[in-house]
Length: 259
Image 1 (cartoon, rainbow, N blue to C red):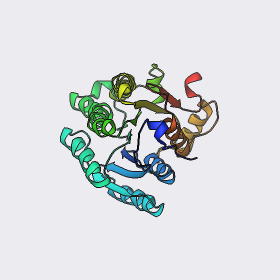
Image 2: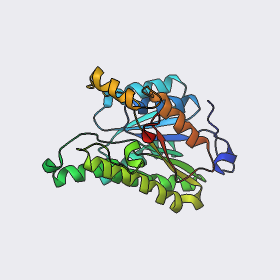
Image 3: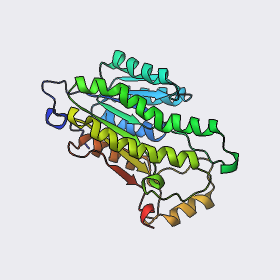
Image 4: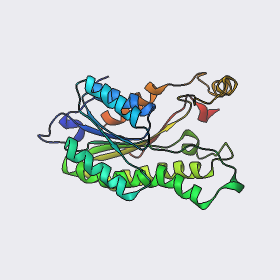
């Protein structure tokens, strides 16, 4: 799949063909997305918190593909860290054309055991950081004539139908990501910055998941399988290449939402 970094796609005039993509979090899926974008001609900046080894491995893979790679450590729950990561990317790679907000927490906790700190931490990483990175990166995109912001929600939240107890802050944060995507699409449309979200379903089985649990997920998925990281990368490529889709949340869930 070729990445259409043409002037017509972004509405640029005389801008260089090479674009820069900044990806936060998503060490497993994010690595595949980074490699896919690099193969299509993008330089890559990776924001990691504790997964330094994985970020270095992905950076090495991007460089092996002939593209520039830059990894920066940041706790995305911190305002200053988010801003610093964007500034460091621009300093190192010169610009930001594509922002992919994948940073997320995923943990179950019964409602009666939840604390305000649990709530604040989840929303800070999943929702607030997406706003902060978007706010900081938008200035670079405006100077360059446009860009793409791709946020990550969840198929359950995107369907507006909570299904699993124990995920109150997570569900609210991911529902908020969908709302943030829609309002940013409106706010940034005049600057030719297209904002969309991806809502993954059964893409990768968690390492701790048992075979019985994995089989149950497959049985509940109309397409009868886990999707794999490439399905997310394909959707990212579609949203990067499109110049007339904005404000959408695309469920990549094998049909889970219709069952």
